[in-house]
Length: 234
Length: 354
Image 1: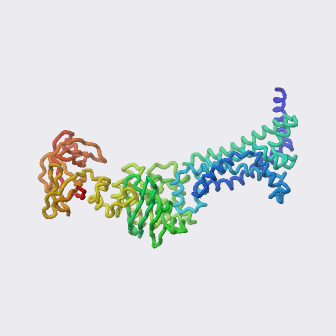
Image 2: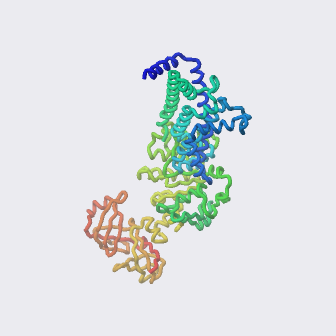
Image 3: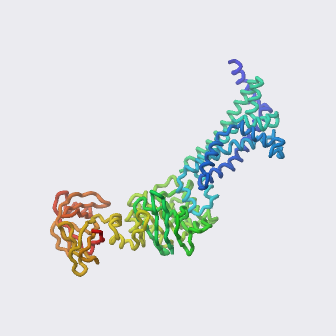
């Protein structure tokens, strides 16, 4: 038990000592996951809304596929993204393997179905007459989606929180696509795995604590925005 | 002018909408009344292009709208108000100005005009979640009018309002609609709403238009027993015309004889329709000019709107509407005997298969 408490002590020292290596890992983790979440939101929210409001053939099958995608194993995503980005893969010319861009791509693929599925459910929960009312006021499809997203913003924000939470904490995909290269593609989760394997429990605990704290801060911020809007939403 | 021909939409087991021909004149308020599930809202949804019919044509402003590729341009000429106000989060002003903003317009004068017309100027900056149900309805109507629609579709817009507020809003809305020169199609199951607001009326049942005309005409001379039942004819009796003198029919109802003005000849079997408000109640035998006088016993008195509904047994069951004041002044109680009278011209006869 002593090594665990010692690990916590050293971990806290590392955090408050502003260790440059830890700070670099933290910065990369945040930038990769926030950027991936932003891209995923831009794709997933309109996509989920369109699927929710439009009638088209195979709609149910597409919804099943999206729901399946919400549980995509990050390791499988990592494997396929790594294969596609590898030198001989179809996207090899991009030279994104073992780069933060490749990691962003993998995380976008993980977060997009989650945010799409939850956005779709949010918009589908709106009374169909409400959507008709928007159209009857003279809205284009794009305008009606903007209004629907605004009206369901609490649920959409929950979708964003879920998407961000899933990628900031995943390790399989970033490990396989990023390669956990020190100073280049090492993020909090991959660094934690590495330090644990090397027996450096103090550093692993420190990284784990940072990951938890960071996740807490981001979610606190999003939840604060979400809850401050509850009074306005009908 | 709106011309509808052979409009058909079949929801197997639920609704079979079929409108052979319907013309709605430009300007004025056209009401469609009918019970729940008659197809009224489906009809509005077809006009608003939210529902595609199986076949038929709807010609509005010279074009069959069912073939329109550009639905947006058409929808920007119309407006739709549901029974729920469906307001968006934000201020009242933002809600009313939304149709204009969607069209890329910023006409603050038009919004202010609507705020004034619907008497909600004091709520301009209020958040919509702080409004009462009645205020929400006013905002929804103001929002529907702000873009000056050429056609306004009202889908039971007063359904959730309390009676006194509803009455006030109907009067104001009627005035606003006539000053704005908008054509209005208004569906409701409330006869009084239709009677107070519409210029023309159609009765829809089981997906079909059964009767169309001026509201007073339909309420006083329904074409069928079903329509009579729906438009508030409380007494519908089966009888046979056994004699006719000029246009006065003598109808045998059970053991009693009712005199009615009608074009039907002797020998016809008919339904005798008597509206409750046409029956006059008195303590003593009436010496009025009414041709029908009956002595009867009160079997039941129940509250009905602002007054009471009186059920009389006088050889047949007769229902009369009486004011609260009459019930008190005449000291009417169940079991007591009173006199009922009604004019021959107040009775409407509907031919029935004998």
